[in-house]
Amino acid sequence: MTFEEQIKKLEEIVNILESGEKTLEETVKLYEQGREISQNCKNILNNSKEKIVVINNNSNQEI
Amino acid sequence: MDPITVSQLNSYVKAMLDMDTNLRNILISGEITNFKKHSSGTLYFSLRDQESIVKAVMFSSKITKKSNTENLKNGMQVVVQGNVRCYENTGSYQIYVEKIFIDGTLGNNYTKLELLKLKLLSQNFFDESRKKNILKYPQKIGIITSETGSVIQDIRKVISRRYRVCELILYPVEVQGKNSCNKICSGIRYFNTPENQTDVIIIARGGGSNEDLSVFNEENLAVEIYNSEIPIISAIGHETDFTICDLVADRRASTPSVAAEIAVPDSESIINLINNYEKNLEISVNNIFDRKTQKINLLDNLINTYSPDNKIKNYMNSVNYFNELLIKNMSFYLAKKEFIIENLNKRLEKYSKNNILDQGYSIIFDNIYKKHIKSIYDFSDNTNKIDIIMKDGKIECEINNIKKI
Image 1 (cartoon, rainbow over the protein chains, first blue to last red):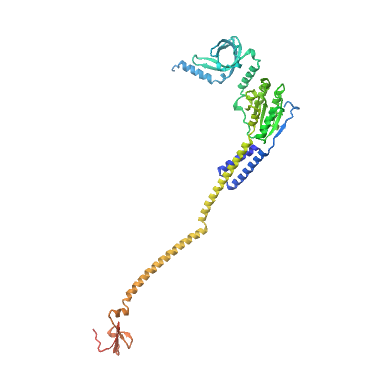
Image 2 (tube, rainbow over the protein chains, first blue to last red):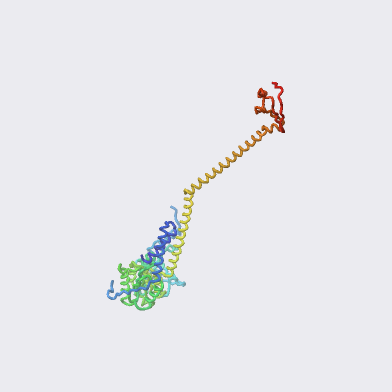
């Protein structure tokens, strides 16, 4: 999942749980999944390093 | 058919002309005639060609330093840009001029630029409705700018502060000069190829003179931006500079740093968002648990009502109840009987031997045959003595005669 998909998934899980219509088993599963995603997202945000790539475009000036 | 008034006719024609988008923002070429400048600054004139003539007005509010209107005079070939509307009072239509381009100065850069803007405007290049949305959480950002200089540094600084999750891909170009436009166009095409695709493209350049920025006013670049499948953020020059590149791009940023801010979200706000989501997760899960527990308790109570234990208890209660009832009824019955018996006893007592003697009666007793004499026939032949028993003793008697009454 991309970062955006993860955030979207997290939002979705929160919405499902807020509606309160799931069974206990599903609730526990969704909760665990939600926590995992949120921790993962925070890890990504806190631990990412700047990445920059410079294209070498001298050889092929016309694309 | 009832006749309509002149005002109604003029008002109708005006409405018809106002509705027609073909008469909005058009270019008309012709020769100036009947030129008149009102004291308010408003210009009244007509445009003519070989066959026809049309009235035109340019209000003073439309005239700026760049308008180049001081030298206008009759006989001049010009191109005007404006709207055709009906002047209701006189029932005549005229051109309401926004801009005038003097034909002789069409080579002038400013005029050329304005004409190009008009052309692109008419082709919907600047339409907000066709502008693409910028992805909120980009993974890859294509940057087209100079490899050296402060612009790329500013962008990197902002992005590494706000959102290090994404990858920056710099397509280095010269941002002025002969080759510049082609290179920038190549950059846009590069990021539009499937294997090099990014989520957004930033085209950026620091401040400079109008001449320096002229690359970003070229039609080729406008077309390339217009055709890009990937959203483009343009940050050219300073806040006051508005290039065609800025106008066609999906977003315009006043500076390269602002472009970077538009391109990426702020990690801090995402963390806040995630924290909120976490809080909501806890709350809603607790709510669900509470609700389930309540339901379980309810069902537990219900099930207990129907449990064997409870049934036995219920039966036990009934048994106890009937048992008590039985005991109660029984003792009541016994008490009643006891009462009756006592009563009978009391009555019986009245007739006991002692009771009879007490009342003064006597008992005649045959001492030989040891029996109670109740009748004259009870006497046997040889009975000659009897005892008369009284309450306080006995009288021994001899029998002289027995007579039947």
